[in-house]
Length: 188
Ligand code: B4P
Image (cartoon, protein in one colour):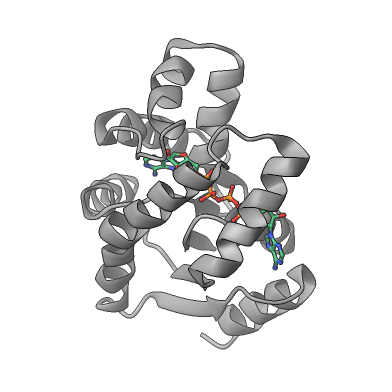
C-alpha cells in the first residue's frame, strides 16, 4: 500500500496517519514530523525549517524534496509507505512522480481529509493550549490555511485527474474518521 495523505492543517493528517500505519503495517513519512524533530535537535535542517514553519510558510521545495528523496531511498519500505503532508504543492507532486518512477513503484491512492476552516482553527487552538506548538497561533493558522488553499488544494486536483483521489470527511470522532478512511480505501 503506497498512500499520500493531504488535507488542511488540523484536518487530522498526523492523527490518522498513526492509525493507518498500524492498520496497513506501513511506515509513515511525515515531513512535518521530520522538520519538527530536526528543529528540536537544532540541526542545520531544523534551523532552516523553523524559519518557515514558525510563520506558516512552506519550507522551500529544494530542502523538502531532497529530504523525501533520501527517506524513500532507504530499504524499509517493502510493504509500502504513507506520505503524510507531502506533496504540498504542484512542484513537489511532479518531483514525487520522478522519485517513484526511479524506484519503479506507483501510488495506490491519495487520501484527502476534509474539514472546514472553523473546525480546524478550533482544533489547532486547542492543541496550542495542550502542546504549545509554535505554528498553532491564530495568525499563523490563518496563514497556513491560505497556503493550503493556494498551494496544496491544486495537488488534489492533480491526483483526481489521475483517478487516485479518495476524499473523506474529517469531521467527527477520530475512530469514526479512521473507519471511514479504511472503508473508502477498501472500496477501491
Ligand atoms: P504538518 O506537520 O503537516 O502539520 P498540520 O498540517 O498542522 O497537520 P498535523 O498532522 O500536525 O495535525 P492534525 O491535522 O493531525 O505541517 C506543519 C508545517 O511543516 C507546515 O506548515 C510547513 O511549514 C511544514 N511542512 C510540512 N510538510 C511540508 C512540505 N511537504 N513542504 C513544505 N513544508 C512542509 O491534527 C490537528 C489537531 O486536531 C490535533 O490536536 C488533533 O488531536 C486534532 N484532531 C485530529 N482529528 C480530530 C478529530 N476527528 N476531531 C477532533 N480533533 C481532532
